[in-house]
Length: 121
Image (cartoon, rainbow, N blue to C red):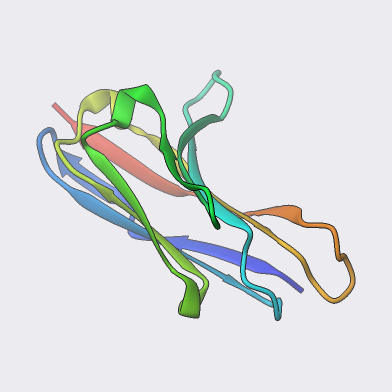
């Protein structure tokens, strides 16, 4: 059974930094892609950054130059380094892992439970 678990959220002042981590477990296959999304109340979940095997990272325009996504493939882990945080970055951040399993050979998306990031002004 695949599990995706995020950690690293919290409260930080504007201009500060946080690092989120996400581990995907339960599959013998490395993820095809891992990424971060965020959601605020009343709004749709939006892409923050993704990293696709063989395709490289992609970022939302709002975080380019401030956030960096990186992966440790040996650990099936993805990180999101967030610098120069702004109050508008406040959201629940979700990790998504796209991967195959023994039961499902076509890659499927698996989501974590989310971690709260709050940036105070």
